[in-house]
Image 1 (tube, rainbow, N blue to C red):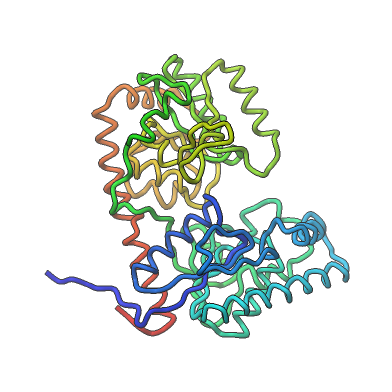
Image 2 (tube, rainbow, N blue to C red):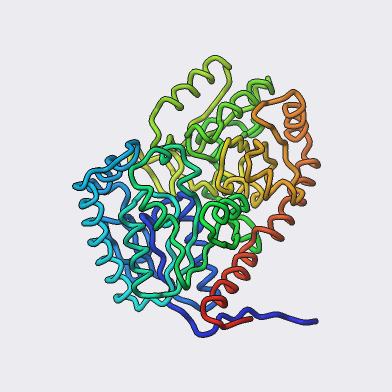
Length: 429
């Protein structure tokens, strides 16, 4: 039997840079997974961002790098949603850029960084001065770069009208020597090549499928009771933020049409930063549908603990084992972390066939209940059968887990990241 060992030469000091590495947003989660993979290959990882919950001894906090910094919010407001910018706004952008370059150089020197990993800051222009600063530092230092792109400006309507097309062309993303560009789906890969002539590699979002998921334990066994559900209720989990692109109205319609008092929809995350109109619309739909929906964001945290009232707090991974079914009716996703989490916890999924799912995930053979912007009678009946047939659920779970292990495990990321380093340093397998 031939065994292949991955080698990326001597250990490297790898610096992750973004607006934040904090909480459970998709960019933060995937960056942590990459860091885990790099560590398994013998490398050391360091962090720079405007908001951090990373280890202090390997981190450089730069508040100006946050997209929520007041000066950054002010300049972003002046360059998006308008067609032109004044000279004073240009000066404002350039001033912020120079201060951020100082922070980037400080980070590089502090930890002796040998490889830069900009996390999404050269893709979506949430922080234009940071993207410009990062681009210039790459050009000036010629440090090797693995640029990890999750979302691009052209994928978000709010960036369409802007006064900074020159900056977007220059830095979102740049085409510079010694850069490996990584995207998370094939549509992004094709668009990046078509629009900017930039080649890229796909590294999909991943989970540690080699390690079995955590199960019920003494701490989380009481979660159903704590949120007011009985053991025989159908725990239908919507594990996403409450924002319009998540399509939660479809989950509400599905539960309504199941027309069974056991069906309870549980929404685990809070509303996002896109206003309250969508949440109010959902509450109106829930009232009209006369179904039981539990919003439990106040009981779900990043770590176990208690809130100010002394109530237990659970992690999302405490919630998943209780679910009988997961709904994932998103209209758009860059990839789909919640889909992978459901597969990892061996839960059946109702999924809206958003574009990336249809192109990159569905052809792999996953067993799901699919809807196409409409909750059909067939989807409702298939969902009902899954909820009532344990053997069918377990059959789907086994198939899906095996596919997750094959296509979206840490082993996949390990192999692909080793290849990126090999391309940069000429040190192969």
